[in-house]
Image (cartoon, rainbow, N blue to C red):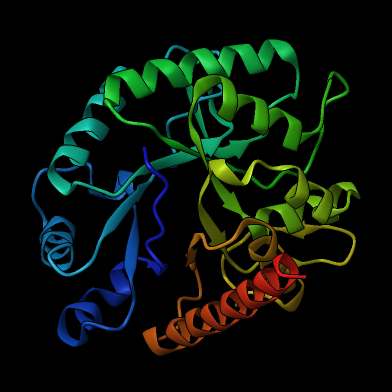
Length: 281
């Protein structure tokens, strides 16, 4: 897949269907949760079909369980492929994690052990999925709240190797990096600086809940200042990347999300100016 820059987008949520259709806001693109549309017909599909006539769409999944030792769910992948054929998304993404254990769905994005064995396992499964879908996919770094004693490398080393060996791309979640950095005590800039920018196709921004000693990725608050700053530094290093804001709970009126997205645009522009000045000195 040739690296694309779609600009600045939002997660498409049911609360805003009517607003988007009626007002056609100045948003460059929308991201949908794939599983919400894996049905034939119904109101969500009707609204999506209408909205996608005016905006590029990308598909973001939460159930592929690419890191699980359970067999790949081929029925799920068939439904995903069918949806992609109908929606024609710019790309498809899911999380670098596992959700199923012994056939039981945990309904959570569980962290991978960062070992050579796990790396090889995930790479093989990504290749199968990409061949089945007939397209390159994006993997998102998930937020985490524990680490494994068996870890043999850092998360950024792990995901870099996976992207290289499986020839996939990355959905770089800046908020998740901040959350994990707070929870595990590493420098988030070390992560940002280590990732191959040529593999980063998309950026997620979101809010979280800060409990002081730990942070939970809840997607129910505005993006906070430290995450904005980390985003600005990310763009300085990587250049322009398709950026979107996620909000999954305490969903505000559309105008508030547009305001956040305008802030992302302004920060990105400022970071690109700084990047270009640095390149010319």
